[in-house]
Length: 124
Image 1: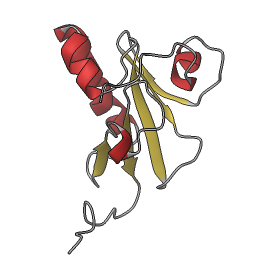
Image 2: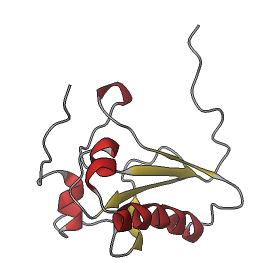
Image 3: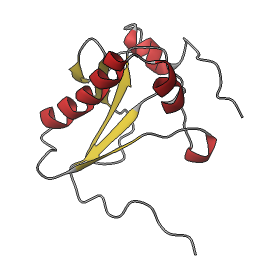
Image 4: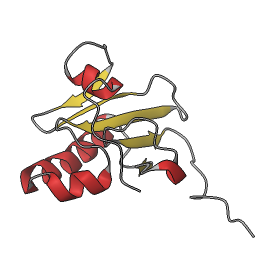
């Protein structure tokens, strides 16, 4: 199944255009990191590329080398600014329906601020 076409009216596109406010953590030419409005950990930040990419597959296929490198450098910069490097953090990208991707603008979540436990529960 193909991903949906990029919707320029998605909430993250609106944040990038300044139509929806956000609490910024980091911003550079390639990415924006901001606090999630419904945090699932003491620290929960989203990092989004500034380009119009639906998901990780789209980003990996169409983004330039500079965009890809800049995006992942922004993830690391946000984690440093949040003081998460030493205690540790998790970053996660939901891709597609089985992963429950809700906003179809590629993004990663940074979680931290407490022991996050194991990755996922095993199903026997």
